[in-house]
Image (cartoon, rainbow, N blue to C red):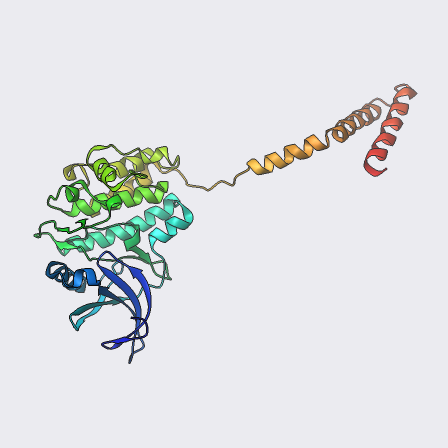
Length: 340
């Protein structure tokens, strides 16, 4: 599709691949406005249910005008292909940042969390559950503004959870127990998925990593997650408790809303916050210093003896001339070693 015109837009380049379609960078041929266009993949375009869901995404996002949500600008169909036009975010996803950094400092992770949870509070107030909150769907503008994206599997609260032919809608690492079981989703669903995301931001891993998809889903249902502060010593007890509550198996045991989740994160920071400082690795410095001492040990011993002899002669000037001879001997020895 690169270089072709679709409606009033010219496709410039492909920038991503989502669960339901491809995302392209495009420019409005008249206004020269740069946008992102999501195109429903051919795999789903002939599927009435998936096509309806894609159109539903457009309708859902069209309701949103929030600083932390990727906004929809237009929607149109050409030759039975559906095109969703969105604001173009020229920045990185949280997923790419974590791939580069491994994990984030606590202050940074919490700042991101407040923005994401603000977006979720807004969406939930409109009666919409995202259902696929994960690092790949959290984006950053050049001004470092956090944007929640991809509502391809979002739903209104009165819809039932649905599956594709290939399995569950959503990403396995961040799926909730209720999604796996095909039960009703709620605001607590997004709380869980973002809890897993926060866990990864602070530890560099998800709670149930290095397993098959089946094992991961089984772990979501049955296995207690390892406390995140076992992977990151800078996570305080209060923050650790908040994270674990957000990813409780039973939705009733989680925070009742994204707003409550955000408030508890702020409280944990005030109560028992440990400053997250990246200390430099001093081991190589000490190793180099130790090697230097070892290689020059003889010189240091002689220098030490010379200092002792000089000190004795200075503080005890009436000592026998033998001390003066010793002093002269070691000075000559020192000069031969270091300068001879």
